Image (cartoon, rainbow, N blue to C red; front, top):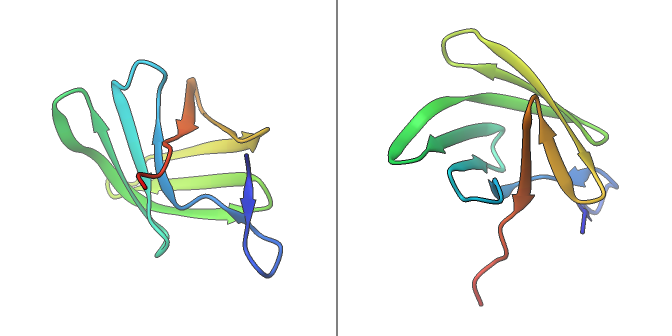
Length: 88
């Protein structure tokens, strides 16, 4: 499910994970992201912007990447990530 904010923008903030849980990408509400890979915490960090359902990433090293949310799934370059269900 894709969430939207009061102004109609796609809400991407939260934890996104691959089906096997190996890659975990936290998209923070402040426009920063932190990606863990396996046991490597903060493997990639940087900032992101959202335009509609499209994301543009800029890693802290200057590397750039893109992603798109379609049907509640984040397609980030070659990765497929799913929003982690919130704990009640």
